[in-house]
Length: 255
Image (cartoon, rainbow, N blue to C red; front, side):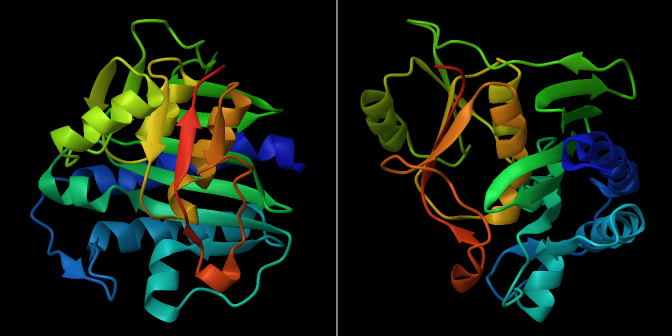
């Protein structure tokens, strides 16, 4: 299977993991604290186990870097030029709170770039994925529809922000980036909303991990949007020396 064709398979795997974790949402699962003080639940672990098994079956020759495995055993010290990045539940804090904006993410990296991926939102049944250099969406297994990022709407630009962001920070970002309407949102759904033309900007002035955004970047770029490292320049993957930690970035819809 060629890399441009991987997206639909990754979408199927994300949906299977989504079906697994949805009954566990709002079920009162015990929340554990990882070494970095972030939360993890049995839902994260079960989803990761399923995803790793399915990836090994579909793509036995491609290495996988996965959040919970890296958290428990340490991030790998080397990766090949092609590998998967897996976040079994992106937005675990939202999952724990009972909020709907959490996702299952699988991204594909080749030569430092996000080249494919899929993201599934279990609560809404939405799945976004790449195929042949384009981006698609389906809902609850329905028909696939191509999605495209929109041109910046003058006077009506929407920026997606963390729901915990302070008003003074939002005001500063609005002045810096020129958007009109801030909207709170968690997880990689933000990148998918940019990809489908429902929003225009996602400024991230704080750290993330590569598995948080790889799939979203692949989908956004296939839809005509982009992610820039803070200050300009490409956004690279495979940062082994940094433990797969990202710096600041700005995600945008179409120019």
